[in-house]
Length: 111
Length: 114
Image: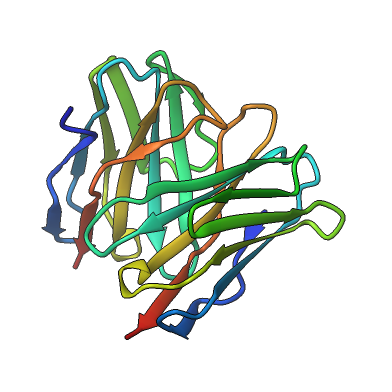
């Protein structure tokens, strides 16, 4: 059962524009959410996280928004750069238990 | 710090053979995770250990899969016998704690079962 869903397998944006990656979850008990970034032939690396007590967390060009009522979170990248091209995984956990990942979205930023 | 180390990086084997994947977590980390990545299901958690003890193995697909962590610096994931549908990239990750703590991933092992 996929508790964390990323319904868009791919996204393509122009350099300098905003990239918006979406993630939906089904388990209302999730209280911590993370985004990981993965380059080819490498393991995923942590990018940004948000606790369920917040609705926004910002780190430089990256902002994560959480809408608990809709069970939805999104990652905004502004401005997008070609080096941001990677697969982005959404992840969620609850009560400090193990983490569940989405299927990933492949972002391509065109120069 | 060398990060999480996995070996081999690539493994090609024939159906029915035993496959053993190895992982060395970051020194001092208390939790270790094994994941499988496929195109259809993304990153699936197979099993995780905390202080060398298996905590949740509900993601292990079937009895052909087994994992051990004999000490804090080494873990194995074994598939016996292997099948073509086991072909995937297998990641090992470690963290200070479980759950919400940031996990550090190894480079993965790409397994191909012919």
